[in-house]
Length: 348
Image (cartoon, rainbow, N blue to C red; front, top):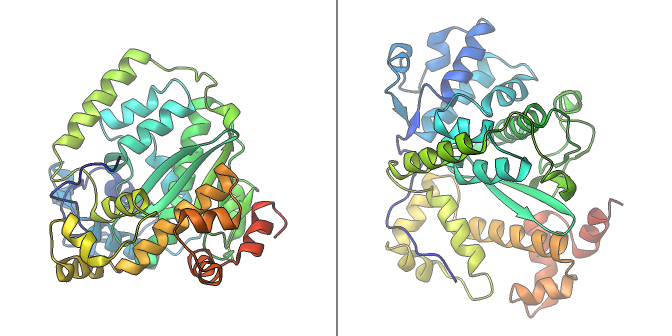
């Protein structure tokens, strides 16, 4: 049953991110490497003194500009990975305590997804379990643009580091990355491991399901549950429950078996088609791109977790013309059905 839509959403100019949380970690890392604070904050609308008060809230577009400045002023290949390693569980109040006291990987990942607007505000996280694997899918919540790869690297390093620290061992994650292999791929080996697949259809992390319920040392069930409740209360105090792009992604995924047109979707989102187009443009995207991303996400789930054939995937997504489905799949994932089958079996 489709979920009830909210009447408000977080957008790229919504000021809801505490500047002394994740942005401060990025600033401190840059300052430790000798970056000038004025150049670091140029164009962000931020002042270091305001951040130190602990009351400043910034918008995603300001955070993304800050990341862009760091990339420009500190072009080291390991910056995103080092940043990610310190971001989780982090120092973000109750949300971080909830992660620190998770009893096992499943509980940690479920809390990370539930509290993601507090713990990892710029990216969308989706947890998927099947009979053999746990999948963590990554998406764009606010229009990351040229900062997308940096955020994916930091995000995957964050989850890898968190799971290693809390479990006491390095877990055998497999990493699927949608961008091409970069020149600094050795940084991936150092910080993530050797199980890497570049130019993948989606950004994903995958792990054998056996690791989900292994108990983690140092967990406190009571402290973790109370902290999670406090984190949920913090979410309720935000201007809106989630981002417009995340809401749209969920909406589209839930309705992929029916025709989806901009006009009807805009009506369900309580706005005119022109307003929805304008808001998507503000986030650097469009309706067709968002629809393609939702279809790609569902198609990969059907292939990976349900073992569907290409004909079954096409039927599920309401494609009657197989040639059209092949062209569409290549547009979504970069691969034709035959190539995707090879990729899924590890032959590509």
